[in-house]
Image 1 (cartoon, helix red, strand yellow):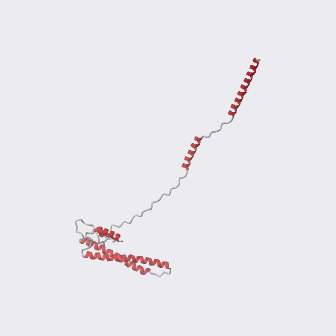
Image 2: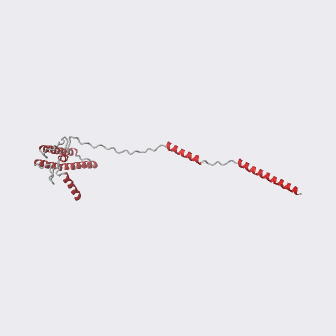
Image 3: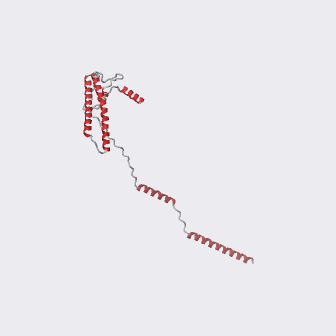
Amino acid sequence: MAAKKKAVSTKAAVKKKAVAKKATAKKTAAKKSTPAKATPKKKANTKQAKASKAVTKKTAPKKAVAKKTAPVKTPAKKRPASQIGPVPGIAPYKEDRNEEYMNEKQVEHFRNILLAWKRQLMEEVDRTVHHMQDDAANFPDPNDRATQESEFSMELRARDRERKLIKKIDESIRHLDNDEFGYCEACGVEIGVKRLEARPTATLCIDCKILDEIREKQMG
């Protein structure tokens, strides 16, 4: 009896093992049959994104940058060599180191400059008088009358300044006759040929003129 029980128990154990093996075999077969989930390739995608960005940068049209064009500077008109100061047609004086200041040649040179300058200003005055006489008209339009009056007033102001300048020229000619031309009225120093050619009616040297301008600024 004991031998029969052992045989039955061994058969049952064998059956259990066989059933367990079949169950494990089914599970492994099911695992193999289910498709594995595709994991996204992050690295490949990042490389492709970088490549696409680089392509778009290269192919994207560049924005046209408006270059700032620097304003063209018109060159200043050079004064001709034959013109000194305000008077054209008179060559500058060639000063010699050994010659005396305000000798006969220099006096004659500045006399020519002053007389030519005075003649030029007088011609401008005559031209203005003729212009005002010829162009004066009683326009029916008040705007036209206003523009004409403003033009005439500007010309009269300019002629008034020139009238005062003619008086200074006459004073300089008198200084030439009295041998007082070319010396500073404040300190008595020589004004200099170059400064007198630039401003023939100058009565102060450059230092006294600077001090005079500083005093005017302080007083004003």
